[in-house]
Length: 199
Image 1 (cartoon, rainbow, N blue to C red):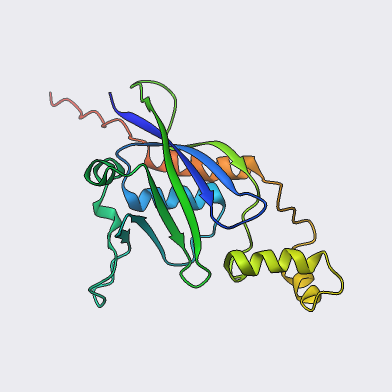
Image 2 (spheres, rainbow, N blue to C red):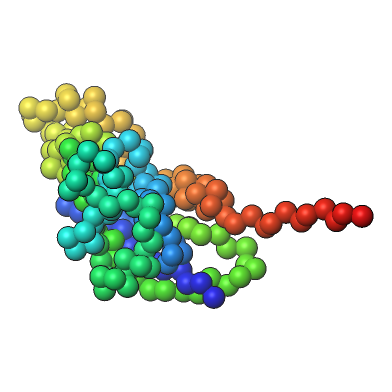
């Protein structure tokens, strides 16, 4: 019986809190885990990224950069956890803005063969993700402050950058569930086609 694991994903240095809990197979490849995090947070997957466990990084390798990350498509979460003993690790998205996420392995649960449950899936979502390309946690905090302060020097910029209906405490859970569910359906194992009998 294969196991699944509950991951708690917290976006660091962001107020109000942005938190997600997802359930993934423990043997998920790290490139797929990246896609789960993107879907669960609501990011657009338009920047470079890296999963860091202690001092080792996995991402998209660059053949011209010898100190770059290891290939995330060739590593599985279970192997990384067993090799390092880590119970928490980092996910960095957009090296310019520097969005860092802390990923904590919370608890395991069995995957029962033959059930209708598909993996991954979203368990919990708290807080809206920040706008991309806004300057990271500090730029985001300043924009929120400027939007609410008509005397702030960046007030007009904040009004243009932040959608009118944006609420940092609200989250569209159904949209995030849909995004994660699409990955689960895409990765679901399909039964082998029966070969026709030769008469």
